[in-house]
Length: 460
Ligand code: ATP
Image (tube, rainbow, N blue to C red; front, side, top):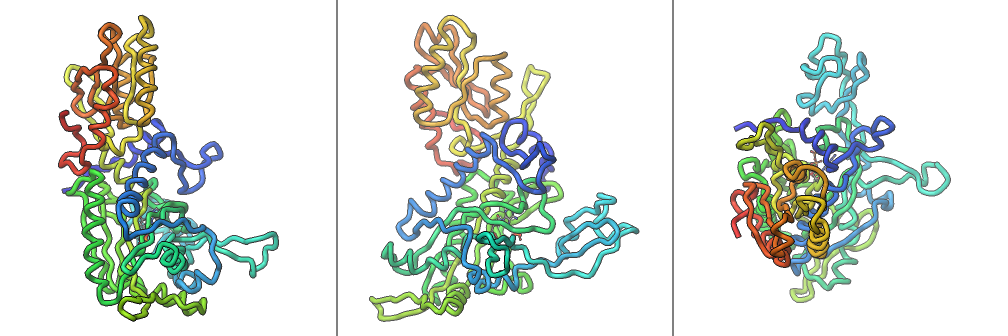
């Protein structure tokens, strides 16, 4: 089954409604760098908090860490990034375009977008050369090579170099993990597809340290658990799949690797949103060698010392957020109305704004009551208040923002002290006492997110 291409529609909806803006737009934009607007930041935070809860707070065998973006330059020599974090780059001497030699199939010829680079008669592609993806900068006021430093291309190395710090401070025993959420930077040759591949992005990575010999068992456990997490976000099961890295694809450090892929539809199709890797003792081994510091774990109970193996789960919140946008987008016709509606069908627990609060008119005490209801709800979750324009238009705007509930105060409300709750997905309405509204919505938000059709709000 192939899914439709909704990317262009999402780029424009994201700008219109404040999910994602192009960076420095008033200056013409900066290539493949994006800013998250009022709705985008709420959605991204909900996603990251969900990951943090699943990976750190709800477990007793994973600790959190926030290591710095800038690290000692030797870290990147030890990790292999200085020598090997490269992509094959080809230039076109005719149009000056630059492409990843291994991704020509996904690229467009700038002179003739219907063709791939190299297919147009004027293309003059060079032989591939290796291009390092790390951003280099300088630390301190003197721009000499001794002060050269890199923006980290992944968060993982911060967890490896802090392995013993975290283990000793938290008194964890192997097996245990270290989790981080943070920025990473890669000077990608061909970024694109909106926020799918960018030069500045975030990662949610977890390094799980295990005794050698138990590694494949843990690898399988993490594979299953991470796939279940993505399903739990409400991502359509038929869009999710595993991709196993074959011999030629495996990174030099990896003993086994699977990607979790999401089908973004259109020509982008199925692409990695998370990687699960068995990295063996490559990382701790290299840091031990380059730093000269012993990084072995001492298993006192069994009188053993060893370098643990690492199972890594590496997820990109930006890509996963794009998957959520693609997954949520739907266009619907509405009975009795000429214009259809666009709905972002996020699960209520991930939706950026939980409720819109609308007085039907600006008189008869309705705005005052609506403000009181909105203030009551705001103690528990993000709320949007709006008193301008036709009620139908106000509902449509919230449908596009993915707001699962709209609360309306009408002439009956001020008499009976009650409100209507309108549901985004089936547009059905119920009437509840004004003081109960927050509780009713909170009950929906607590509903298990893995309900089969996560776009529908279950009945109360
Ligand atoms: P790709 O093959 O797509 O370049 P990768 O295998 O290099 O990705 P990892 O190093 O495993 O990616 O990074 C883990 C996760 O970080 C990816 O699954 C993805 O979600 C995210 N990620 C990596 N590079 C980027 C990028 N340039 N922009 C946005 N997210 C990214």
